[in-house]
Length: 149
Image 1 (cartoon, rainbow, N blue to C red):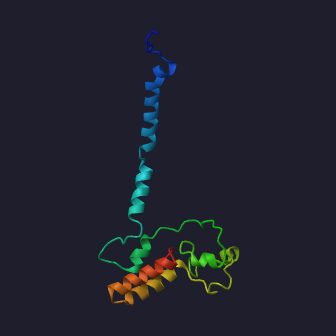
Image 2: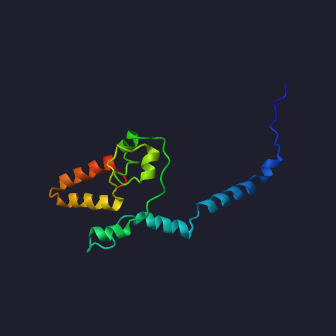
Image 3: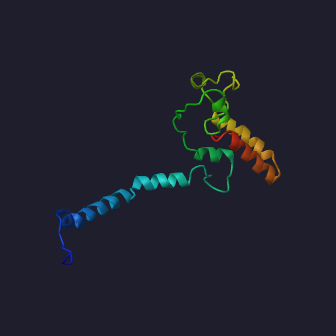
């Protein structure tokens, strides 16, 4: 038997492969380029919640830097499950319509406090603590039950 010879067959796809690769590379490059809007959003994220200056570290200067809250998140939770989930729990700042929709009537106090008012109360309690360890425990407990604050 005669040994098999390897033949080189050129397909039409092989010839167009380099141009396809450059087209893909340019598309990837275009999608990974950052625009000025993306840079502004990144800067906003980096400065979110930081006081404007270190001299006047007060609650008022901190509240000025807070961004507006996002639209309500749709969830399948109702009632006590909303209260026990720190991501969705807003304490007493649920509006009446939202309390009815989520089944929270009777589960949270009827008095409604805004998030800012709750933040004032929590900051007052936090600032009365002298021990750094107790401050850390207070913040950890607050985070475990309510991520909105």
